[in-house]
Length: 184
Image (cartoon, rainbow, N blue to C red; front, side, top):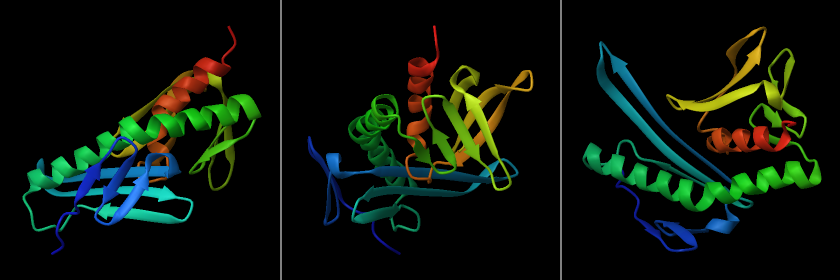
């Protein structure tokens, strides 16, 4: 079984074993924690953390390591905290800036964000929504769910796994877009 990776955090970077990632070079982040239960008891927990830069990708799978579950949980939580504090705010601001200042479309998985709203690109059709229709975007069981007012009620209109590059940015990014692009 593999050992847990060593990590070191500085003001500007994250080092995982021998791989050094400057926070400003990271273009995408994703992490997942799946908990499998049978008859109410936890039977398996899968933890994975991923970083992308323009020229490389690093995936840290924390399962199967020869250490106590608590150590795996602690390392996963530490990696997620570094991402949420040092990487994700910049990525969110850059995405919002691309939409707001330059009118670009920002795509996260099958979800496309524009000034006018957002679209879910399903296999057979694309569903479009305006920002006033957006209600909330939540993290639920390793999935990001987008809830919009459609057909007279609030319902989930898109769902992405948190392993999708930058899906973890969506709850705060979509809230910021809704505030920036909803008239009045």
